[in-house]
Length: 384
Ligand code: COS
Image 1 (cartoon, rainbow, N blue to C red):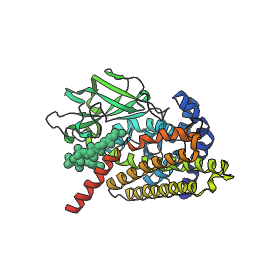
Image 2: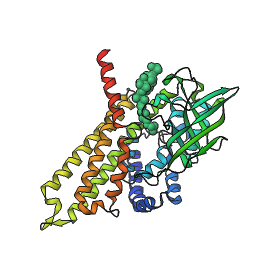
Image 3: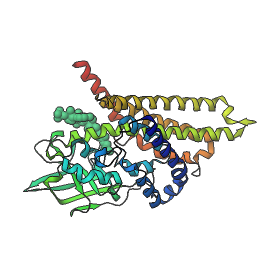
């Protein structure tokens, strides 16, 4: 946790400069090569970016949710692939252990996530299990002092480079729903794990995903997160609650970048004898984007502060993720429109961002799932 405003400002300034001077100039190369250059990865590690949310006693910065939101907004001002490469260590790839892991699991893995020595990935989604996450079909059968894991996990972010996988698997086949699921931390390289080819995606080049396949993969009992069976789905939901707020903040950062691109283009580009920014229809698009991005920023920060105060922010995280991810889609669309024909050309960043942002409405829970969570909670509150 950052203790004073000055230290926080320094961190934000450092990240902002790093984004401007190192990441933005490398965006096109990352998009073309579908990989983040090694020297940039090394700089990210040196800056502590892999351990933003890892508690200080395990060598991370231990940022509060509000601090994390502010950092994620800064990181959002460049290609989402950069955020993604260290996003799992700061979120879904480490959070299960932070929230529910045993002390031994924390000591073994968290410092390595914080330094970036180990990449953590989160394995919930399967070929037949997406939004209905409690339907996990991957199994973990107890066999003496081991579990044997079988199943396929799909679209796993950082799967190709991961050193550990947080795997949700069914330990009790009698219980079909959430309570039959347990969470495991499984080390890459364990016999029985194989990776599918890297997925070819619409956008976010440089952020790698693949299938992770478990075939009679034997893991010791100590791999069970928290040492308790039947808690895996709830752990996954807690992880996503935090992750959804983080994604909201990234959406705000991307929207702010897209507005900056739109504004500078509109100030330069002349039509009908004046810069297009002086035309009111262009101004309307800029103003709508600004208003919506500001609203999303306020929502993310408000929810983050509530979470830091210990409140249950399940509803707020879903509201924030729903609004911010839909908002950035509209902002990207306007950004392309303001650029006109140029916005359709890949030499302009807005074309790439337009494709990149589409994922925000889908991963870590679709917009439809966020609406379900929000409405269910409203109903529960009304009934109780
Ligand atoms: N925090 C803690 N516990 C939670 C929780 C949360 N945010 N959400 C649900 N739970 C608990 C419930 O309280 C319930 O516990 P009990 O067994 O003690 O009653 C259990 O988890 C099951 O919850 P629920 O009945 O609500 O589960 P559903 O199957 O109805 O599913 C949704 C709930 C739809 C919200 C869930 O499946 C979901 O989020 N799906 C989207 C998955 C997703 O985001 N995938 C993206 C890919 S991963 S990057």
